Image 1: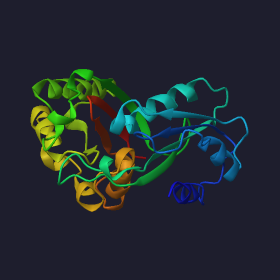
Image 2 (image 1 turned 180 degrees about the horizontal axis):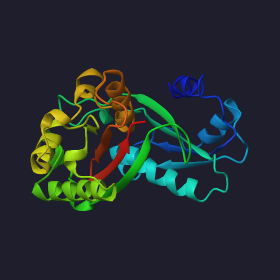
Image 3 (image 1 turned 120 degrees about the vertical axis):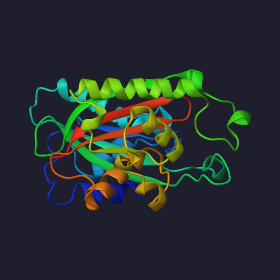
Image 4 (image 1 turned 30 degrees about the vertical axis):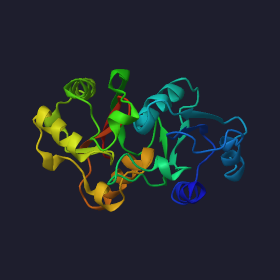
Length: 258
């Protein structure tokens, strides 16, 4: 699954792999055995530079996917190569069936997504990103069973503060965002957030929830692809990734379509 995704990533028109300086892997829990050196496998299979380093981003559970933008930005800012790029990979596979759901109606699927970020190039612009992990929102298994995602109003206050901080850092307001792209975990949570943000719910992209369901850290990137293909994101549109993780993790990114 992962290699099929990377095969497509490195197929034309993307051919230049010489400037990839790092591999960022984001996943939830134990997607890979501890002994597997996955970055080296990727480096060897796709003939990347032997100096490419691999990094794992796992601490925000299902909201690791937006954190990857911040880590990539830091790595790129420290490179002397103006054409430096970072290979970003989101992949999740549940090892045990018990990890696939929180209740009778919620199932987590397996998926992979990959993309390349750089300081230069014709792609979408990343304008701002932010994240927060508030462990006050961690609930015990007995509290989580057969309940919704969030525990109370304090979670929404934290969520809205992070979103407001991010759009402000991008020099925008909620009204300027053409499309909000959440991950596929809780439509109800996003509906409450939209109400607090005073944003029409029609600005939220929920089609991924019905078509592919929740696929861990791949959600945002699958949904982005679906939104572009369906015409929901057009040239020069502003869009915002929103990702929430079990235990209080929140990540978001504001971008502008090329």
